[in-house]
Length: 109
Image 1 (cartoon, rainbow, N blue to C red):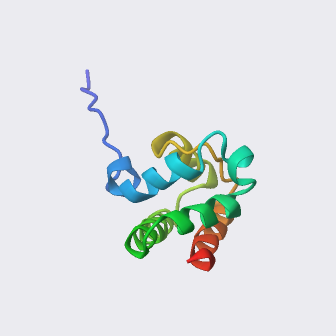
Image 2: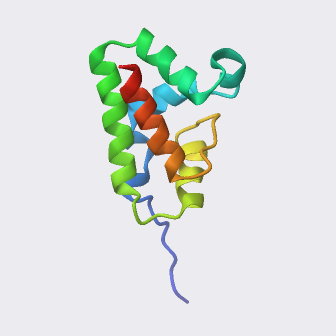
């Protein structure tokens, strides 16, 4: 009989690696974000209006790190991590949605 060991999540796909991004998603892209902000771009603009430059840079930096760390991951795995792992109320349909979010955060700065 072979002993099965629990496989830990790779370091690139652990909630702890993205604290600022997790806080942003919980605060701005929660289940009611469309009612409150109208769109992902509206949520990004609201965050940028509320956050200081360091907070904005941390979120953008963590989003870029997530995109780099998941270049070989399927859209389904990435989407599942954003929703289940990071607690987002917004479900990105593809990697392109995360790139658009990054761009919206950059424009709103």
